[in-house]
Image 1 (tube, rainbow, N blue to C red):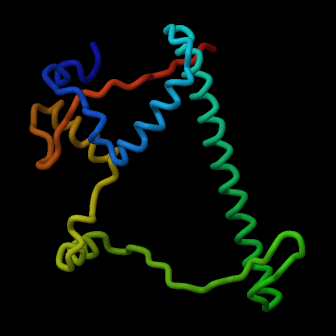
Image 2 (cartoon, rainbow, N blue to C red; image 1 turned 90 degrees about the vertical axis):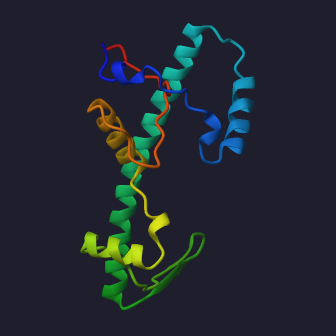
Length: 164
């Protein structure tokens, strides 16, 4: 028996049209589906696993490249500062300049939250989806209603367990 079995009964299926940007994304998905001709479960599983592995590899590569980019940025800013320059052009590459600007950082979340509410930003404030979803699931497990303004649906997801 799974953790959520008791609360899944009676939940309506998630309507895909509720997703943001649903129409254009659905067109792209439909186009991709049309290119898949062998629709046997084992072939689809193999395709899913291969795509999942490629996405994981690219995300890992992107993370590593982001770290390298931050390192190069930090070193370049230091070199510019050390040389007393704000711009440099290299033939065949282009130019990079520094552009000073303000950078905000929240140091007192409750005060900032209150300020947002008082200044008309209340509807723009939201929990990350993962946090809201976990809060809703935990409330349901505790036999409580989901937070006001939240509807909980049943949505299947695939879970890949790779052979070792």
